[in-house]
Length: 203
Image (cartoon, rainbow, N blue to C red; front, top):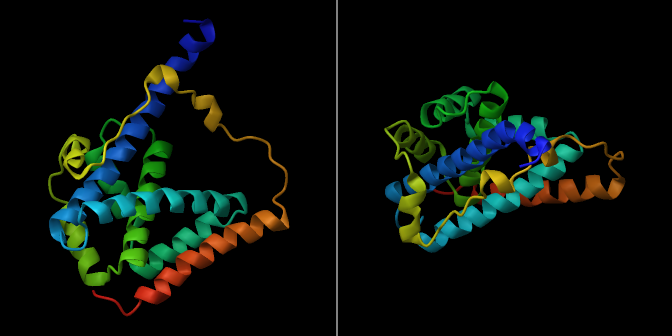
């Protein structure tokens, strides 16, 4: 192991832990959705939920590139009644190994996105969101990734040695072009279209 790798190892361990706990929190949400609403969140739909989440993460990256992420996420959370304090408490309760406040906030933001997606793209209204949150406040499985395998969803995390936290450090970037901004808001428009479609959906 080189001197640089020895120096970077503790930070890569933290990154590995964050990636694992982020996946586990998403797994807890998916398992809860299946348990509460098995006719809606059957295995294939759970896979669609996960793929949609990955797509929405990419859209959020575009919004962040044009400094629109914080504003839009706050707007969506207000619209759907998703509370930052609740999301942070969920992370602290279920991922006690995550100690650094900034990392807790990152995982909490991912919970926000997961809940926004569930409301906007799957027709979850206030009543059912309340049921989901209440269920998530109950004791959760410690290693939910194992339970997901029965739905054909598996997680194969990278090892600590394969990670490099430096790749996540902010890079100097050119000012966003008009095309970048346009693409970011095209993705936003698609998400808003889902919201309009399900506004009168089941609660």
